[in-house]
Image (tube, rainbow, N blue to C red; front, top):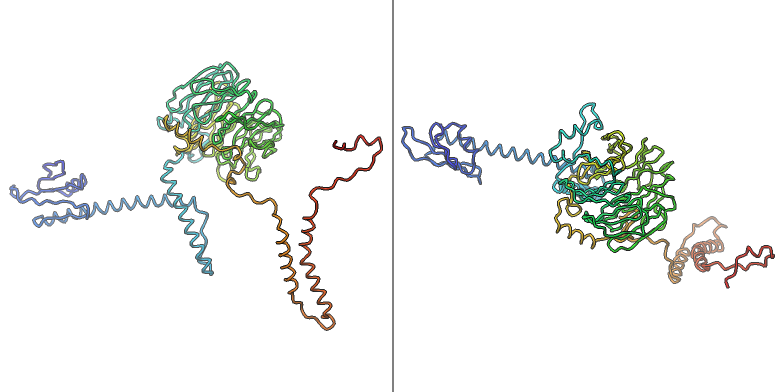
Amino acid sequence: MISQLTERNTVKGWNCSMKDIHECLLASPTHNTIKLWGQHGTRSKAPSLKKVEAHGRLIFPAQANLRLCLLLTMVANQEIMDKDRLVTAIEQDMSDELNLKTRKYLRGDGANLETLRDKKLKGQLAVREKLYGQSAKAAAKAEKWLMPTEEGYLEPEGLEKTWMVKQESILREVDVISSRKPFDMILPELGPYNLEYASSGRYMLVGGRKGHLAMMDMMSMDLIKEFQVRETVRDVVFLHNEQFFAVAQKKYPYIYNRHGTEIHCLQEHGAPLKLQFLDKHFLLASVNKFAQLHYQDVSTGVIVANYRTGLGRTDVMRVNPYNAVIGLGHSGGKVTMWKPTSVKPLVTMLCHHGPVTAVAFHSGGQLMATAGMDRKIKLWDLRKFGVLNTYSGHAQTMDFSQKGLLAIGNGSRVQVWRDSGNQEYEKYMSHAMVKGYQIGKVSFRPYEDVLGIGHSMGISSILIPGSGEPNFDTWVANPYETTKQRREKEVHALLDKLQPETIMLEPSKIATVRPPRRKERPTKKETEEEMEAAVEAAKSITFKKKTKGRNKPSKRAAKKEEEVLKAKRPFLEQQMNNDKPLKKQRIVEAELPKALQRFSRKKAS
């Protein structure tokens, strides 16, 4: 019977059961005191029983009941054992999870060292395998602590297919915040619409074909600014942050701030069709209706490059996020890749037997998707510029997500493909718009499982589980950044701005030593020394003694002389090539007849 339970978990009474003592110890294991009454109702010397947590044991006075002492000891030991088991189970789970992540970073199976007989090689391989294991474990720990959130996904049950799951079914299962992200904004009078997300994924820029421009905060769903330019709008793009954006209008590109104030009019670009911004280089790239490609530095206002593509008008333009190379799709089925320091394209690929309608680059930079009027969608490996897979289908717009999902928009239907392994893409999700809507652009929202759709009747947004990166880096893109953080980031971005010369197909070659194109010519003294050494080596050759009559001194001298000449020959040939004049002498032309003199080369006066 428990008569009183104070704040320090003191149990007073007699006939205390094991359950009562157990509950008292569980309530607060650091301050447990049990006082006993005498058998005849008189209070005797009450023994104080306290749990010493540092040693994990109980200390009893001498007057304590032996049976009660044994019971309390058993309870305490059971508590300690349960805690040890719980800690062991948690550690085992963490170890299993870490081992699972470590396997992802290992370089295949380790070498079988037991079959090796060479002790030196066996020791070297053992050290190497140990280093591989340590690096893989460090990478797994970094992933566990720095990237604690895992991406979502759709998992089918039985014969169910993921592309059969509708948006209504997804909305019923997600949390309240995620259920607010999909929406349909019907704007039938000013479309079709283009849209663009900021690098942090927080802001969305919307541009209607008939001059409607708007910026929205997608976290609070607030309208920041909305205005009308009363001119055709072909494309919109954010600059280095959400404070400025560029708009491709009817005659020229314009730059506005977030309050709708016009900052610049870029008349040198002409009538633009598409815009792209290279954030690491602060370059605004545009292609106009005369197939001219312009690069302009928005930090200094200088036109960096202006090239004619020479392949006709195009409105298909994307930037590779890996190396900042611009990809253009042309009406002849070709895809060209450009950088601002090259007059000619870096790469020209014949991708389709018809006009190219859409181009998209994977964030890793090694995968490109193209679509053409020949009703083919192709995936290309940019490391060898070869086609990986070809699929039947048509696409007006395509976009890769941060996790590698490919969105394809055509007509009033959107499909999302996912890599099933070895660059084999298959259908992951499908969404049908209202019949009659024509999709103009699809764009994944960074760091969110959301796909934005710009169509002829407005803007829509749907949920695509597993499309966004769940762990954002605040030094790269921070959706929750303050005004002070934004200013600091802008200053650091300007200080770390890359020059246009750093744009190349393989950026890992930057800061490496270029191999010499041709071997440097040795000096005359070095050549003579090498020839003398070769002659001495030829003279010191000992010839095999042959039968009588074939081993005369004259024949042996002739053989030795032949070896010396053979050793000298490469050096003499090299000297003759070096002595040749670099420019050929002009041949004096003979006197030609009067009928042919007008075809002869005129002499410089």
